[in-house]
Image (tube, rainbow over all chains, first blue to last red; front, side, top):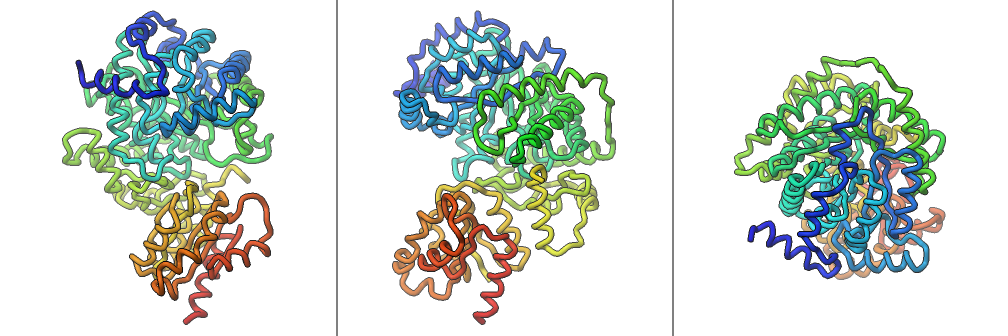
Length: 455
Length: 136
């Protein structure tokens, strides 16, 4: 028996896991409708795909949410997982699910997929017959992903870096790499049976003044870690930076670099897609302003040329959105997208050149780490600050990089920590900002720059 | 001057914590940042380990109220090791809405020298500097 199968057999022994019948699951994936695969949708789509966010504890409420989404002309359905399941605390999610079912109050902030099990969930997913994307934030997602694919969920978001650095203080990063290696292998194996399973990285990270070069490097590394295990369809992503120009430049560079590095490791046959997240920072409490922001995000996504957009709602500032508000954003986003044809092609050569150079310098430093495997090189690079994510709560993160916005709202690096970017690039970044201020004013600027969309 | 700082309890709100770190450094302090999700014992141990002059605890989700009532008891366990350390707390200190007039004396009583509830960061740090100046 292979090591992977041995590990599998241990994982599914968890007492909260469904009764896995792998032969039946293989058969199901082999014969599953092509409409369930986002990789198939990407191949045949002639528009940007629209995907909202959303997960409710009970089967019935999730079903109702999907009905609303389908009526609003959704392209991709989300399945957002609750926070207990994300921490592998299935006992608590099971208890909270029961309470939610008995009292008609939501006691969980998402759908506890492991507790519902794949046999039940598959009924809902095959009924709607649309691609479903799994949204979670789990460092050890092995059981969750087995359950998801068996349910007919053929897009898996996340990764060892992007699901750890923004969400955890001290979950061991080396373990996260190994748990995600398992996920990649399982996705790669199922991809051989029908259309490929799509993996998507979570580019927003902390959504707090993350410089584009850091976002892109992490996207590329998670993509490479996935492709080297045999995944054939991958989405890189990022969220609205606050500057339209910076978004367009980021989109152009990430596309170019993804193709370049995929070919470098001999995986040029994999298809790579670009996903754009509507503004992920603090939202305005005024719901009309929130709608303006959402609409502007959609326009920028069209300028970026994203393959998929992930939406927010007018209720973002006030908690988990109702299904009505959520469906409304989907309908509005589709409406806006129908208007946006024949857009001008904006290219900022200088910015693209600087960003490309920054990305390549950091990637080179990662590859030059003496460790023997890619995941160990990446692990060491995070540990020594070659990769440094602003505002990560994790103890391994260096927290030396400081960024502010320039007058055009572009995110700029004013303190580079151990980021191995060239003097030329660093001088360019700093030159855009007014740094002749005392330190307290710069801190006030940072506070303002974080909350930029609230005023 | 050395400062130990961090966010108390199971609070994971990291943005303000980083800003406190940057601001303190900008003002010339040597900062030992324990980050989010830090327990009271960890704070006091770090103060002793680093020989810090100031302990600056922050809270965003209001967990401070629940944790900080034990400061005095815990402090007493350390004998005179913490004498002369400035205990400061700031942020959003309670769950729900209460007035500062009510909250400040309560946290003073818990063992804090400086208490700032929903006060701008720089105002708080100005007050800390003044307090340290006056003590000289």
